Image 1: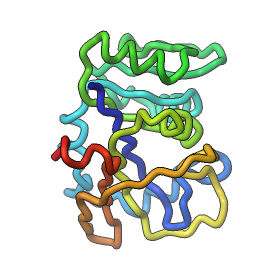
Image 2: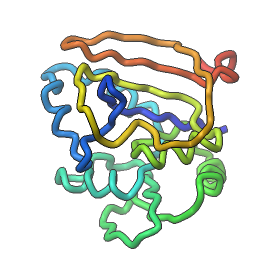
Image 3: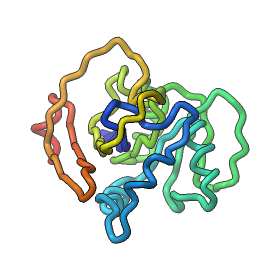
Length: 181
């Protein structure tokens, strides 16, 4: 089974980015010598999933941040892709999951954005949520999830505070808590 992990930073009022898609507000919480567990998390995943806007934002930062790991960029529009690891696709979540399983990928990071996460969540494909709660109120922006109309019960399996008030919350789908660490 392929585990899909939605690992994301979110303001305490539920936004993953400002209304214009920027994440400049996260800069205040970048601390030297503290990656908030990112290196360990990144080593635990085998591939990435992201929407086109997230992809455009990532490449706008300069050098490709995810070398050596396959990355599916899900988009219905044409994008210029220069990284050999990136696969542009317009497939639906179920088709992508089947592809990941066919490649025997066990743990995949759903990087963002909120609409993509909502589409995977609505179909029950997200197995783990790693939410970095950032002590900032944005007031408006791109929500953690787009509307799905579905309810899901989760089990908190880890709560780790960091300097500056950041808290990492790790949740598993309730039906999986006996199967996963």
